[in-house]
Image (cartoon, rainbow over all chains, first blue to last red; front, side, top):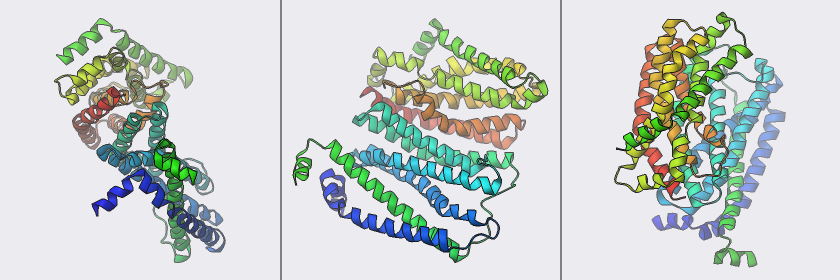
Length: 244
Length: 213
């Protein structure tokens, strides 16, 4: 059991074994996302209140869910790299940060595009919007620190500490923003109190969420493998692999 | 010992503390010029503006003492010394608070007067700053330790640390503007206790990384 885990910590083992996953993930994300887009954008019914613009949901909600969980994954990887000093965990932190930042930006962008027809404005200082914005800033901080500190191992550890502190702070930030919001804004429009969705809507939504996750892991894996090769360029296994 | 050293360094070159005070005064003076000199319109902005200016001044002064300590090697000596590392980091935070938070706190009534704030709100503003500014200092020390010794632009530290200061800012300003609603006061105190216990330890972890750079 432990041996099995330890093997995956070795860059060489990981690189050779994970290659088989790429076509699987590529096929899965392509198929699921394709079907989800088709089902969500063409077949699913328009909302009786929101009309056609409800279809932004099929991109926005998966992006928002993925944004939060990608930060959590990054912080868990950071914790692993701090405690066990696994090289591969550090590479994982570095490679997931830009993907997570982009996903968070996508969630914010689609949210504001959805806000324009629904609320009449691109941006509202709603609690959820604000905490997603702060999540984006947290990603930006990890990226900026990594950029400034270069490629060294100490740079990676500093960025990892920042990611872990960010994860511990996320609940505090979230609650404080919630309290601030409840005081500031009367509940003029909420996303939370939506009428229960019929299957014809949450079916494609669920499909898009799964598809987003598959795509996310695919992108992460490709970046991670690339990063591992770059870091270990002088080692024997990379030289041999590249010759083949 | 350590604390006395920090305070001595500060007293011998008070320019840093004076500069962050001047920064706060100048920035606050810009707002009436940019928005309106009308007291009835300035008054609702006051608490938030003074809190934001305090936060910015703290971030601006965050890495002053650490940069020179890092450059002349005394940071490394402190890490190697017998003192527990979290205590070194706590002393750094206290020094930052004395040189930046405390002068700003004392200056707050004057800044409030510039923004036409009624006097009973000034009391709550001071109270919120008393509880809030140490949290700012603790986070600023963490940020300074993260960025010390890097080839960096001056904007890096605020980018890293400002998101973490959001809860403090929210609780502090809400406490002051609601006129001391107990809930926000309790939460701000809880945040202060939590930061006081955890942040020096986190900063100590980062300090070890910083000197191994």
